[in-house]
Length: 243
Image (tube, rainbow, N blue to C red; front, side):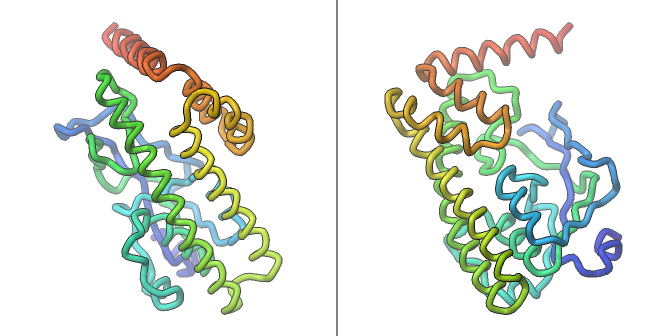
């Protein structure tokens, strides 16, 4: 139905999920229904600028279906690419559009080895926070690798007439910002405090969400202090839910 509603133009269709924990129980983290409509169709390439800046709407490959034309036109996905759902979502927006279904299609398990979901918000162990940091850094490295796919697909879209020259220019700038933001955050997370203090203003200026800037500000604390604050907040949330 979502594909039909797009006039059969959508090159990709994806939906939302219901989160479950490692034991298969529903978690308190449930999907947002976005605009509240059953589906929404994005068919303007420049909407990619917003997606590259915010990562929203989230594309989860487990809920997605893609047109074969994305491979026929742009070629196979590189073997070293981890975030293939983001790469295919990028291609879909370049070549016809993508439909988002505003309803959960599957149950999605949150566990210690998720690549996309580093935490379900209920972290209560020090070791969980260390693992979460490690996964975040790994994700940043892999997103920097994703940029090569974006550049190649933009070039092909321009060469085959899917984009106007000015659209290519704007999207190239958006991809460059995406690359710069993730490279800078990786540098920030790997640095000692003096360098973090120097990097923070530049990185905060690139972040579009206030919550992301607050998270980065917390990371200016010594690591043990940051972890202690996170664990204390999780403990308070747990007490509040028990009342």
